[in-house]
Image 1: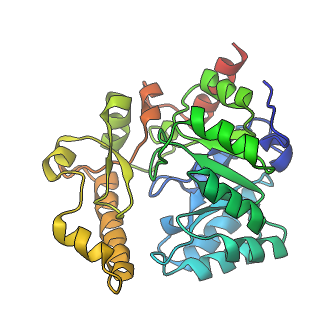
Image 2: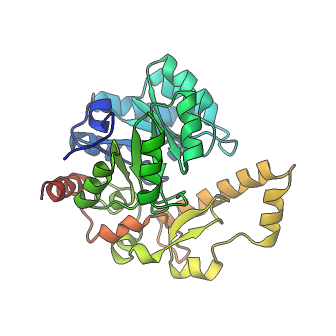
Image 3: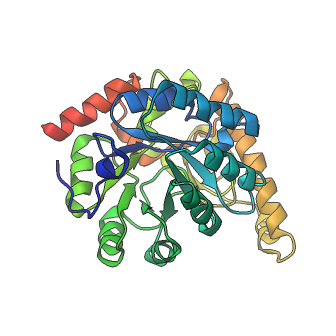
Length: 321
């Protein structure tokens, strides 16, 4: 295993395998993170996975009580997240090891996190954003490509990674499309500092979602992933179940009109986000025909439901082979 990156994820965080178990809405929790840490990788949890600020704080404290290894919290930093400032405050007070920012300007997060020694990794989908967050002081960028799960990028890792590595002076972590050790090696050979992987961990023993959701990750593949704007207003990847086919993947004309209205778009986007998250939650934890399951193309590599430790072990063995 080698990386041409100026700063490998292992040396940045003190882990022994350069993988982040990506923050997954509704899926990631503290028990999954603990197993990931014990397996030699790191991971992050979306702050929005906790209904209250007290629950977020308690989760961070619990992980710290069980392990001294590094983990992170993912913050949505745009105006759709009304809890952002308080979530950031708690992350800083509890001193998580790193914060991953998504969907907005990370300027305030970088400033406050750095005051207490927390690293900040920023999701970016193009060079322009990467250069902006580097100038703001980000410790690394997470290059979200078009093969990523959730809010995917627009271009392939084969185009995005070399572009960022050539033009940025901070480490680049690749997110999207990787599901085995061979894929990890390809990313490292391009010069990335590490890999962020999410979808292959949905169908694991420790994952809290329904068996139906897990089985869908086993049953469906890369060709079954589609983009929808109905969840958050921003294109998001989901499994193309019969229900998704029935309701479609684009907003209706009223939603599109309101989302573009100068005075209404902030509130419409927030309401769309809240409604979409509730629909995802219902589908994730119950058996219902209204299945909207978020996942990325890397479910192509998921063939059975395994413990997280076995998934990581398989990645290591694949890489060595």
